[in-house]
Image (cartoon, rainbow, N blue to C red; front, side, top):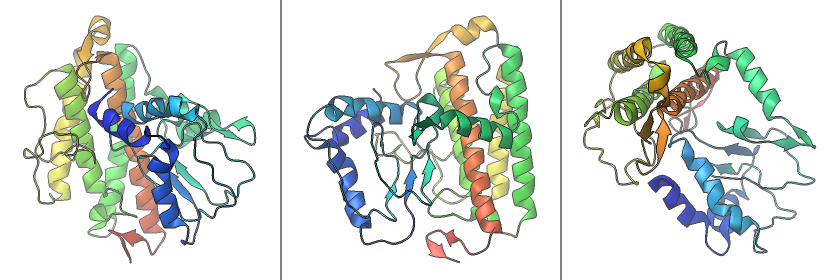
Length: 309
């Protein structure tokens, strides 16, 4: 279990696991209005949510699982949380907004129907090339990366064509487009530079670490504190895209099968192929987030850095 997962397991594993992890957020939102939203962010390592779920499996089997009956949770928001195994019966979910990047790894039953495969099919339709992200051979991986670069080039063209400052707008507290580009550079550094290539100092100073990075004890002094421009972020991003492209140009099946210490859990090993899949997943999920937020800007008044514009 990674340090991130260990920290979260410590939060959700006490005698009343669901209450400790969720009740505070729920009760704070009881008086709120609007529609419910459940958000599982992609700001931490890929294993974190799964590890959180593993940490509460035993607790879920106990009799002290929190139960909410006739409660008004409108407007409640859950970030980087787990609702794995939660059961909802006779609930009003009108307008419920769920963002679960790892949805395809399990099932989501709505009125007895597993909708996860339907969501995956629709996302693949909306994002041509996304279906290639789990390629397992060198040629397939190279084709998948071309699709990723093409999709992101279109997104960059779109934001450049928008009013000045659009790339720095934060919607509802989420990362801006510029910050997202910086995070993708960071993710490449973590899983290619650090995990696969084992560079002693893999991180670009313009990288945007995930939200738990400092709290997990990692050094943030190498990262800039001022907000770089879109042009600067694009330059760093282009360097990291080239790193992936160059690595894939000569990768072999034998290299793909080699083990590497996981980026955030070096005591555990993952294959080079797995590390590449993490990068690919980050690319597609953050593209989805970025385009979602650009759509919000196009639709009119939005929450920008917490203030209604």
